[in-house]
Image (cartoon, rainbow, N blue to C red; front, side, top):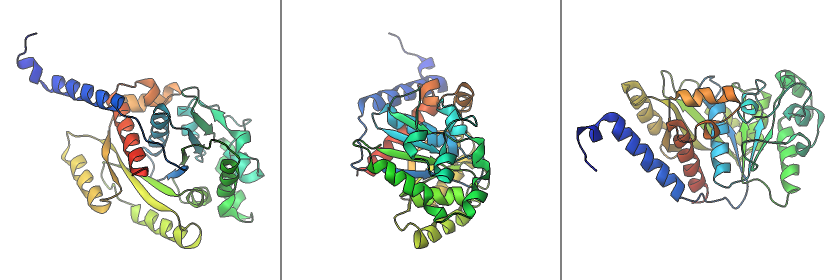
Length: 294
């Protein structure tokens, strides 16, 4: 086979790099945690890739053999859509669990994308849940109590629970903080990337002090990265300086395929598993798995 100048074109180099990444991912086996890891995926800023990251990391871990449960706490229900789960007003949902005290198991659906991937969907009823929760006893603990009861009833509990939060710091998000042991913070590589993060960290500190001392910010994921721009590279450096231990090496690129996938009721892991976005989420999931069992 002959080689020439075409082997060193940018496209050829990119294709070769992707082939190496696919080979490395297919050769590795994801370690499984000894006990359930509960991660709440949160950023009160909208449009940072929060839900996209929650569902694609969940799908990547399930593809790697982990049992995964996704709790959709966002009234928009985008996580439910991306995982192929009905979330019209008549289905059992996180609203029924939080407000009516229904057992978590009664609202669980299996994602058609992977039998290891379970989902408790959101419905439009959740839009008023903050107001309804405000007058309830132990209002901050309702999700934790439901999740604890569910996990303790299982012979084979999930290895991971991902809680997708709304883009706000209301009672739904506080319930997620109280139920979780880890915070996964997606940060987009755009202007004002760290805007609002100090407020979020202050909220987490108060949750640690008063409601959940086990909660830690374990993972920061950089999203919407564009390697062609100086801005993206500067944001990466800035975030790594602020969160040197928590920031993953894997970075999620800005990707048309990642954006398209929810329109087909899929994660990018299912929609185009060989795309750069899917490979990046698989690499991030593998890093999360390794960090959790280190």
